[in-house]
Length: 135
Image (cartoon, rainbow, N blue to C red; front, top):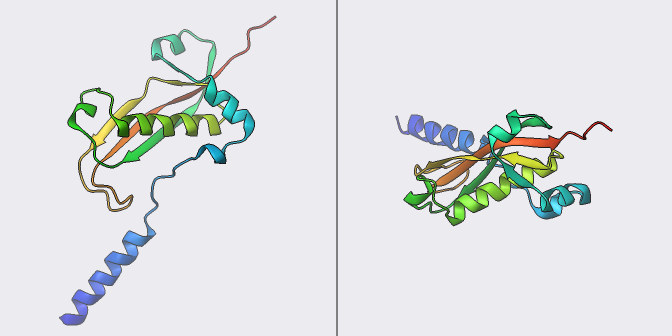
């Protein structure tokens, strides 16, 4: 019985160690062209995107962990929310995007052992590239 508990704890530790934490992009990781896109990156409403003129490069996410105030869940601006949106923009710039759609953020107050967070916020949006107008 003693060995069964020990084996279970070892297996649980191995599974926890194999989990992949959220990828954090740093400004230094980006090439100069992506940094240029990041400087001019705007957040566009989905209605403007549906009118055309943009190519959707895919879904991007941004992640931030730490203490997340309850007002972040209600759309308020908090430091973790700003960091998650900043990560979203960095990930979009790394894809070559010039803009992103309005981010949708989810606040979790559950402990995230994978990312070593007591609370976390994940923001998701679309990476967009403006289509050049025909001459």
